[in-house]
Image (tube, rainbow, N blue to C red):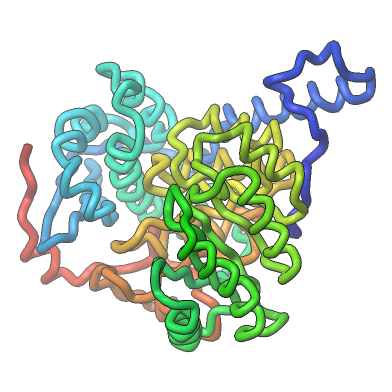
Length: 415
Ligand SMILES: [Mg+2]
């Protein structure tokens, strides 16, 4: 879907009373609010695919080396597996074992969306929300979805809707800062050559701040990426909250001159008013959302047109069901919802399944190459980006098999 700017209205619904608007604008604004509310509250999982309950009997957190795996079993012997976010789980596994997993034992997996809401309320878990809590929920969710997909004999995407694409155009992102523009260009060319990606993302600023050296680098990087990769490459840039408003506008104008495709986190992620000010001033779409934990915050970002591309992280935000609700809210406002991808594990597969069933996922999805992945195989996909496309596995659930030796060598983690 082409990125459209500004949605339907320019004014902030949350900040402005509707009485200040004309009759027509008022009707449009309240129509948008009603449609967003509905999208936010409408379940996305197709429970009608399951005739019988899928009762969860066992949940194990396994660890092999630095990799964490969640294994879920049901009464009828079905099994689902997901990789957790390894580096987060290394710290948060007690939250998983004490506050999240026990609640799901004995429950019907078809009730997944209700269960996620209930576990958020239970034992005041909502006070714990943020990346540590939601990564535990999402790591369990993906294993439950793999289980449900196996029971229904359908790939993950079909649990949410119809498949809209089977090959996912990917982008490669560089995590570098502080190197010279020439070194960075050489690195970007290398990761593009490895994957055939038709899109790249590089970093601006100095992460939540900027200085003379980073600004000098930014001024060189923006024209140099376009010159190096040519007009057909989609070029994204991420400031990780580095700028203030005047600097973001200056850099953003330069990005517009060189036709960059979006500008991610120009100012610190929770500076919503400032981000909106930048979005209202610039033409380039602003991307935001990888640090968000709250569904309601996404609704506000979308409703107020704070950003034009929303980016829930499938793991940090609590999983696919919650992220797909954000995507459906974004669709109401004519925006793209392009997930942020956390490194390692099977994150690239979660994104592929997400993009397989979300029409407004944006032009390219992040792909982390072969970094830190697990030993998995598939009969229906090479699981690699070829010529810039990642084929979505079509087998049931995640559509992959994890090397059984890898599981056998893993230890069960206890609190
Ligand atoms: Mg980012």
